[in-house]
Image 1 (tube, rainbow, N blue to C red):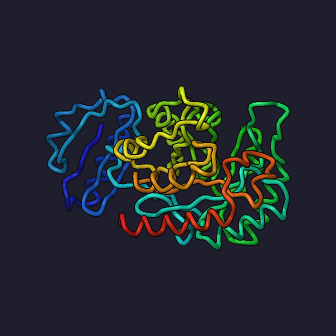
Image 2 (tube, rainbow, N blue to C red):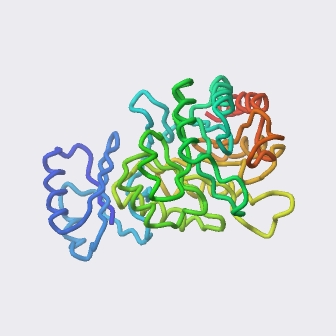
Length: 337
C-alpha cells in the first residue's frame, strides 16, 4: 500500500502517522521528495482501514500495490535512488549519475591488475572490477586467486583511488570483503536467498546480476530479499540471458529490460555487454545501445593482453579499445542529456 502525503504538511504530523502505522506492525518505507512525501506500507495491510486512512486531512491518496516486490517498487519510491560509494564525495550510480565499471574478468598478478586499473581510470572509469573468486562451469578451469586476489585488488585501489567491485560466491567468505566497496552477486547466485539476506544485513552496496535465465520479476524479487533485510544500496545488472541463440553470442542481451526496470523500480540499472555477447567486437555497439536505452552505468571487461587472459579473454577489450569506447560513451551521453 502507498500513501501520498499532501504538500506542506508539518513534519510532526507525518511522524505521528508513521508511528501509528508502525504500531499496527507495518514496516513504513519513507520516500521524501522535494515537494512530496510518500509512505510505502509493507506487511499485513488488512489491519488498516483504507477508507479511514484516505479520510485523513494530511493524505492526498492511498493506492493498493499488488506487485510482490515492495521496497524496490517505484510506486513506493517515485524518485530514482542514488547509490553512493565512499561517502558523499565518492562515485555514485542512479539519479543522473553514470558509472563506468571496468577491469579484467579475473585478477591474475599485481602488475596486471594495477596496470589495467591505471589505464581504465585514465580513460574515465569510475570503478575497478576484477574477479578474485571465479564461478566456472568446469571444476578444472581457473577458479580465481581467492583471498590473494582480493589483496591485489586493494593494492590497485590504493594505487589509483578507484573503488572496487568484485564477486562474492560463498557466504563464508563475507568477512574477507570488509574493504570491498561494492559486492557483486553473480548470475549463478541471484536466487541464493540465504546469501542475499546476509548481504542485506551487511550494509554494503550490492551489484545484483540477473540470473542465467531469470525473468525481470525474479531479479526484482532477489533485490527485495536484500532490501527487506535492511540494505537499500542495490544496483541491478542486466548481463544477458540464456535463449535459443548460443552460436553467435554467449547470451542474449535483453536491452528492453533497461526501460522496463526503470519503469518498475527506483534502483539504478547497469548493463554488462561483455558477458552478454561474449565477443569483444560486439561490446562497443551493445554498450552504446545500453546508454541510449537509459542505463545508469556499464560494466566492461578490460585486459592488458586478452589473448593471454586466464579467463574470458575473447570478450575483453584492450585498454586502447576501452579508451575509444569511453570517448564515444561521453559523446553519446552529451547528446542524450
